[in-house]
Length: 252
Image 1 (cartoon, rainbow, N blue to C red):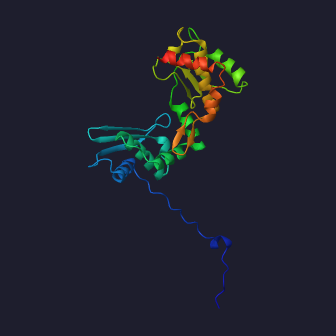
Image 2 (image 1 turned 60 degrees about the horizontal axis):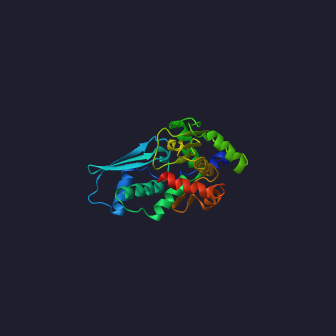
Image 3 (image 1 turned 135 degrees about the vertical axis):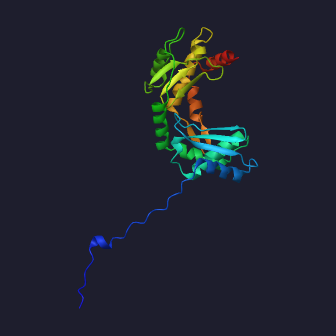
C-alpha cells in the first residue's frame, strides 16, 4: 500500500497570476490612431513623435512639409495610454485649428494635476531648467523690500520664495510671473522705471504673491489660474483702484 504524503504548506500555495499589462504603444502610432479617429486630415501625414527630456511639462507639435513633428515631455512616458491619446488629441487639434473635446482636456488635466505628477514636474524644472533674472534691487524699485513689506502687512509673514528679481529683457505682454517649480517671482524689467508708480510695482508683486497662496487648480476640463478666491483676495490690496488705473495707463 502506497504511503500518502501530505503536501507542505508552501507547495499548496497558489501561484500569483500575472496581471494583464497595457501594451506599450509608440507615440507615432498614438498620433496616427487619433488622427484616424478625429478625421482631421486625409491622407494621413507622416508622423515623427517621441519623448524628450524637457524642463517640465512641455509638449510641442509642428506641421512642416506634410510631416507632423511631435515632442512630448518624458514626464508622461509612463502615463496611461488614455492620457497620451488625450494629449495627442489636444496637440493635433491645435495644429489643425480645431477644438479638442472636453473629455480629452479633462482626462489630461486630471492626470497632470495629480500631486505626485506636480511634484515630479517641479523637481524636473529645478534640475533641468535654469532661472535667469536680474537682482531684486533695481534702479528705481527694490523688489525685496516690497515683498517683505507686503508679506508682513498682508500675509502675516507666512509666504516665502526662493528668489525675486527683474526679468533679463523687457516685455510688452508679461508684466510678471511666479514660477512654482523654482519658487521665484520675476517682474518685467520695464517696470523698473520712473514711469511706473510705486503702487503699480507693489500691486504686481502682491499679485504674484497670491499665486503662492492660491496655486493653479483644475475645474473639470479647465485650468483655473485666477480662482474666485484669488480675485477676492486681490481686491484686498490697499490701493487697488489706483494700481489698476496705473496699470491700464502703463500698458497703453
